[in-house]
Length: 303
Length: 258
Image (cartoon, rainbow over all chains, first blue to last red; front, side, top):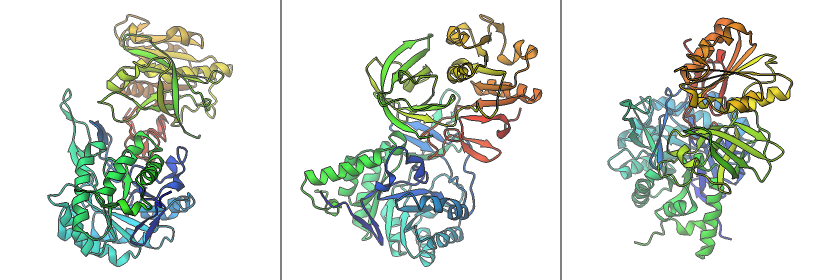
C-alpha cells in the first residue's frame, strides 16, 4: 500500500485529504456518518476575534452543479472557541486547523495569537478571501500589498503552520500567492468561492439577502484546477487545492496540477462520508499506478 | 440521536392528489427510532437541475416492517424526479434529522395539530404518537381547495379532523384560524406545520389565548446537519439552524412580529 503521509510546513498529516472551512462544522457534526479520525485534518468554520451573527436568511441558492452561499462568517468568536469548542474537538482524534478571518489586521493578529497558544491546533488557515462580509475578508486578498501586510503581521504572532487561503476574484492569483509566500506563509490554499449571483425571474428579486454570494461545487472545479496549476508553478511553498472536489479522481487531478493536499467542501453536503471515499480512492489509484508515495503525484502532470 | 446514511429501497410510490405523492421506503438495515417532526435529506439522482439533497418531513414509520413514508408535493425538479421512483429503486437518504415536536415534556392532553397543504405530512406520525398514548388528537387542516387536503380518511382514524378551504369547496370557507373549533374548544398545545403566513396566524392565535405552540419551519437547506449554517432562523438565542436546532421551534423562541 502506498504511503499517503503528507507534510505542509510543520504540519504532518496521515493523508492529503482535509475538509474545507464552513462545510464540515467542527467535525463532530459528521461523526455519525464517518470515522473523522481518518481525515488528514478538519478545517473548522471561519473564526473571528469577536462573535458574528452572519448575514440574514436567505443565505444559500442552488445553482447548476453548485451553490451560492452568503453565510457571512457566523461564529461565536475566538474566546468561545478556546473555552468551549477546543476542549471538545481536541478529543475527536483528528487534527484541527482553524480558519481565521477578520475586518482589520489587528483582528487577524488577535485571533491568530489566541490560537497560537493552543497546543492541539497545529495550523491556521488565514481567510483573506471571504466574499460575504462587508469589510475585510476578501478586501485583504485582492491586492498584493494588503496580502503581504496581513500575512506578515500574522506571521509575527503565529509561530506554527500558517496557510493563506486565496481568493479567485483577482486578475492574477499568482501575484497574491507570491505576496503570501514572501510574507512568510508556509502554504497557500485555493480557491475560496467565486463571487456570483442568482435571481428569481418571477419575483424579480435576488435569491440571496446580500444579492451576491460565493459560488462553490463542481461548477468551479475547472477554474480552481487552472489556478492551482498556475500557482504551483509560481511559488515554492506547498499549494493546497480546493474547488468542487467530489471524488478521488477530482482530488488526484488537483494533485497532478501541483497540489500537495486538497480540501473537500461543498461535496460534504451531498455525501457526508465522501472524504473517506476520496482517501480510499487515492490509495487505490497510487497502487494501481505503481506509486509508493502520494508525494510522487504532486505536480506530475505531463504536458 | 444518531443519524444514519442509508440506501433505502422503494416499496411503493403512488399519487395521492394531482401534485402530491406518497413514497414508502424500506430500510434493510433496520429503521432507527424517529421522533415525530424529524426529517430526512434525499439525494436526487438523474436530475441535472438538482445538485443539493432535498429535506423532506417524515410522514409515517412502521418499526415492524422497517418502512418509512414521505408525503411529498411536486414543487420543483428535485421532488418531480423523486415522484418517478419505482418499487425496487434505491434512494440515498440521511435520517433522522432535526429535533422533532416536543410531545413528552409539554404533557399535552388535548392537542391541536394544525396543518396547511402538504404541511400535514409530519402531523400523521405525531397524531399516531398521541393515539398510541391514549390521547385523541384534533386535526385542523387548511388548503386552497379540496384537492389540497391530503389523506383525510387516514387522519380520521387517529382523531377528529376539521378543515377549511379558501374557496369553500370543503369544510369551512376561510383559513384555519377562522375555524369555529378554535372558538369552541380549549386546546392545551398547538402543533403546526405549513406555509409561513399560516404558521404566523396560528402562532398569533396561540399567543392571544395563552396556549403553548410549536411550529415546524421550512427553510432552504444544504447540509441538513448544522454544518453549513445556511438555513438559519433569527431567534432569541441568535441565528439557529432550522436543520439542527429545529425544524420545530416553540413560538416564544422566535422573533416573529405577530
